[in-house]
Image (cartoon, rainbow over all chains, first blue to last red; front, side):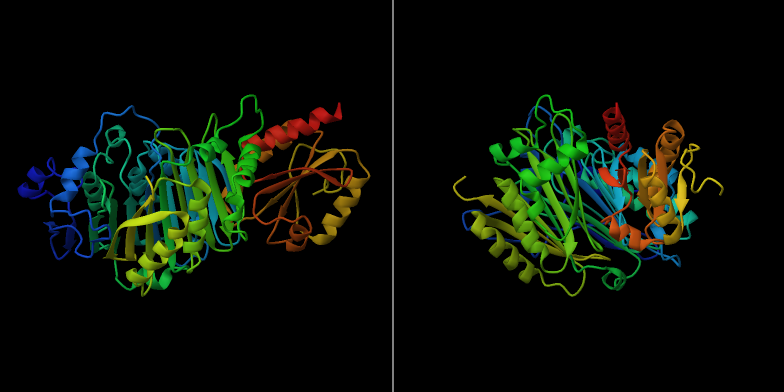
Length: 397
Length: 122
């Protein structure tokens, strides 16, 4: 599908393009529109002209020394089929091929009655019978998993119903490979590879008061679908930077520590207080050498996951989990573990959600941690419900 | 099927399908001095399939160690007895006591734990 010439000429000017909104008919059409109308800024000192997004993104390209990119790319896929095991039937070689395309490997993995959880060399993979969540950081090419997955799931008789791709703003955007060189490239890559049956599609960039944004591309075959299929109501994604230095030190391996990644990881889980975030969950932590930490948590049919890049200068930690309203409390506890200077919280409300409730509950939870809400935004997305995006900074910074 | 109760491992992973057979095998283990690795797994679980070839290879390599597999859906009582919450979980036992445990399909971790146990014998 060729891009209209107007769109092509605009892309170099908009490193983070404004909202792309379209619905398919017999031919796809791509329209440019302004930033999300539901955006509101809470800090009265900031006033933003409508061209804010692209100019801020340009200024964010600083000539910094490149380090490990903590910010993840996340892909969530929903399938339907007749088999109760569904995606969990994917063979090892099929999964290996998918991960190969992304350029990451399995470090450790467990499963319970409801789902399988994999710790990867770069983040995590969760496989439910009808849902898959793949989250990878660094310079992995996450979207290259899509064509491979579509082939293997078709072999299993599974049909793709919905897809959601999301990410924050990279600390080192220039280090990213194709198709992650820009959100426009990512959206186009998905456009060209998702089956035409996913006819409801939307790409948008939720802005903030800083140069950071939340990028989401969502597609579904039916507006009513995912809300009904979703086992939990909320998915919360927390991104933290400028971690408290002394706390971040807890994620470095000690010199001469010969223990396995699992053993050292279990220690880190306890010593850093991560074990206390959701007490019912069974946690599998892994400590990387010389530093870094990943954890998957399993609590019945709900997953949680934490990934830490502790190096000073580009420290980063993420927390994600699914569940009911308690996810905001778990997020609060996770943020308490890292005491970051900056936080973003994105909540996906699958069914009948109200963004104002999410905004106020999240702000209220983070306020006692000394974090002030700087911006809040929300958008409705096909197959996903409502996605909110709020940014916070530590008071006194 | 003839090796279900034997004390010398033939290099294969023995799969236990019933509580009765497990009790018999446990008695046999108590009477021996061998290290036994109990592989708690499930046919529904991707990570279990992921590590299965490695377990088979280890069973062939470490012939002095007994490798036993229990499907937690087939024998949930045994899984609960050993406090198995996720699969795969590998429990190392010697003379009826747990001497090590590896939770998850981490090939490196399992091999290292087994080797550590072997060193302690000498």
